[in-house]
Length: 356
Image (cartoon, rainbow, N blue to C red; front, side, top):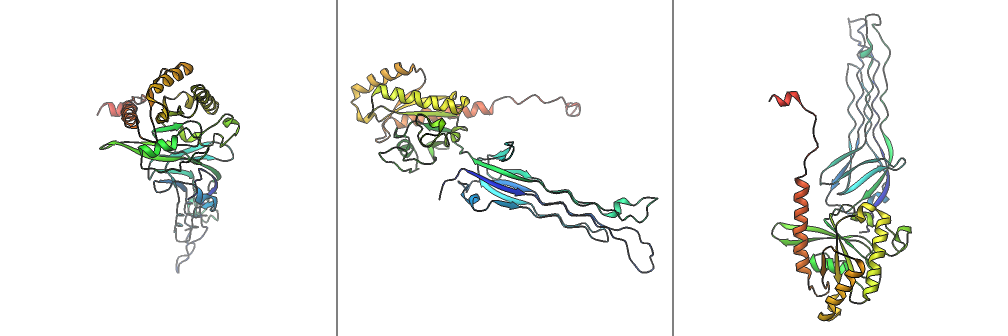
């Protein structure tokens, strides 16, 4: 299925039903008075996260999504039926914004989560509400209000714990193939990966995390070179970045230059993302001798002035991958625990609750 992570759709909530102006008509009851009922509320439009979806491609073909209009009121004070709500299913991790104003409406991050994107119109009132001591036979009623109508910009951001960052052909897809069951396309030419790939890394019983592989970025990506920074947004929800560098087929100087360029493009895209925790992963060590590995590692770290975590691996043979996965799992669990233990925001004092 084609991977589509952005779409523009139009949503229209249902209008409220009109109120009714009618009078009671029965034998032997002259001037029965008003008995017009209210209209029904219009249906609303909701986005609902569905873990069975992984692309927005369907919205390229169906762009208009309209909820049901509320039914009009009737005589004998009968209220019109409420319009049915419309549920639009989207992938987990979808963000919705107003396409005309850019205002962020919200996002759905868990399966089954609902997000109201267009509210239905309010019902109109029947003439029974306008009866008074001076007006016993009102002919006034109100129409229902129109429902919300807006153009939505849907943007799907993958949900992953770890993101892979690096230039094309650094070995990111080979790494995700080695440590997960995902099988992305792997070939010896740039931009083999054309869209994000997700894989689940299992480090033991009930211990796992999700890793995301995105197309490589090159110099000038922020200005649109290569595949641009279109897919860098998919790293925005990751907790940790793995910067994969090729130290087997290129010189140490070129590898350091590539790392600096990739980081510069990341900073142009998002300063917050560039400041996220980042580990260096030196790949393709199977192509150099054991004696040369440590020399290359030391030289590269000196050039980059790097003091953070470093792992040397071979995604092709699996060397060093188990140690990398174990350390990543421990770090991810620590980050998850710290997020759960963050103190909640102070709530205003509740005198009723304080007495309980």
